[in-house]
Image 1 (cartoon, rainbow, N blue to C red):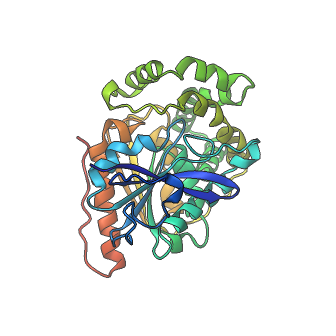
Image 2: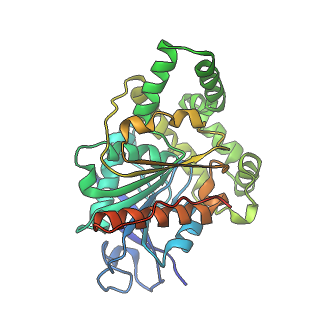
Length: 332
């Protein structure tokens, strides 16, 4: 039975825990080479898909999605810096989004040195992946990007500027509603905010109760990492290093990478209006809406897996010069 098998990568002075959903083997993680299967043979020719989690999750948030995809694609995930089993560098500056994007580049190169990878990212994983996709050479490293509940901070910055400079009743309402649901961001910037959040929600019982409240997730579908309480505190550095700096001074760039944007219309944290300008900066955009909540990888893993499988197949066929159908997947 396949499960997460750990590899490791040294990236930008930090050790990142990289995992492949593969057959378990009795080998120490440090001795397993990136880019090779757990059994030591050269990796097959399936497309490599790198999954990037958000806050305060770890790679475990992708477990059920990985289980549904592992026969069709090579599934790789990693704990982003400061979270899970990866190193937690001190200082806020180590968590700037440019460094997080460098991490994704390095992981992609380590696990698939000869071919671009497909990226699937959620929440803060998606936010940092947008930075990677916005670089000039992104298409050389990334075959596609599936973004879930994590807009580009540059896009958000432009959107907020337009809402303020050209206000309409609808834009003002959208801004007020999003501000209400984003109050936790202000809390994370306060000295004791992360400690308060981790003390309130950092136990497995409290976290499962919270996800059931906001997303309706059954408790048995929620995998809680043993590092959850610490990750809640550590992850605050993502917000402190980037939110004000990037949203306040956006630098939007157009990406050539094919994008699949999974829009969750029941997302309490990322309201759909925040995603309305994605197409301006991603001309090769497929937008797919569904009545799903924020933690859709946990609540609706089959929908996510089917969507990713279809998109990866379509992009793979296109890159090979073969015709492919543009099917859409419905949540169920």
